[in-house]
Length: 108
Ligand code: 2BA
Image 1 (spheres, rainbow, N blue to C red):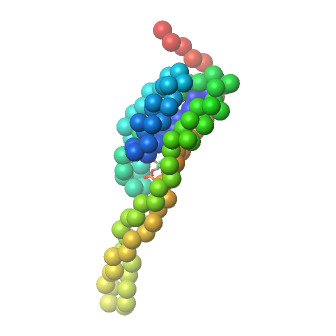
Image 2: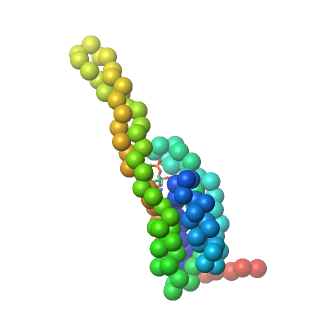
Image 3: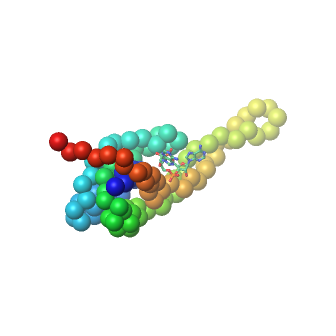
């Protein structure tokens, strides 16, 4: 058994959720925040039997899109210490996924 932890953009989380539950996956999701952009995202936890891991990854991948976010940054201009506002593009997503071995699973 594996534990899949998938960090998904909030805009995609509904589609990932329904895609997984429609195929019988049991999921828990929590609201989370990216440490770099400080934007909200959704973290899914799925306990999955080994033979169903690849299908779960396919579903997550199919519904998670890559996006480019333009974020403000400042750059020094000239020797006088003045700054110019610039934008920097940051690529976000699709999903960031961790797959962990489960040592023991209990449901009481
Ligand atoms: P954030 O931390 O808000 O990061 C958003 C995007 O900013 C990242 O997209 C990456 O392209 C960029 N980024 C992050 N940290 C950076 C840094 N120190 N310097 C330059 N650019 C940086 P993704 O890689 O697609 O990550 C999307 C979200 O997934 C992240 O949001 C974070 O919540 C999570 N994540 C990604 N990698 C992770 C990891 N190794 N461990 C835990 N969470 C992770």
